[in-house]
Image (cartoon, one colour):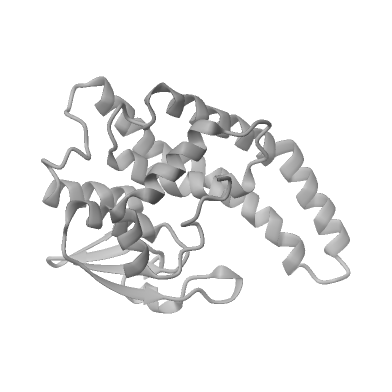
Length: 225
């Protein structure tokens, strides 16, 4: 398997999953360009030019959740990383697998975009763009992110993982929203369950091996420990 890995991206989760399963893989690394953009070279692999993308046995698979499900279907059916069908854990698993990219990441990306807008504006417009950015974040993104952060904390307080008492691929999928969210959400109180979650995943040997294989990944520490 070949993993197309963009530095400081969601692609880290794919390497981590492969390490958890003991699947052999190769990594092709890409550096970000101006404005944190992915290189045009990635468009030769997939039309959208995004990462992660994998190539495996003639298949090109994009989108993090789709890649995770493909890998588990092919290499990890008996790994325990996906709960048994028909269980409460399976329902929770399906929810968080979809939530991670469908609900969490759009808000976090919006927050980042509005933080960057003043930096990219012509100098005459910077004061106006700063006011617009501040207004959008204070009235829209920040309140919603606080709600989502509290939701994560509450769910993890149940039994420490997102899909039940056992570690699953849903926790791998939720790692990136939480790692980036801990930098962007102004929590009213220290989120103990979230901090503990980060400490647990960062201590996993597969997570650390993925960092060694992938290289640059700025979220691999615990920002609130």
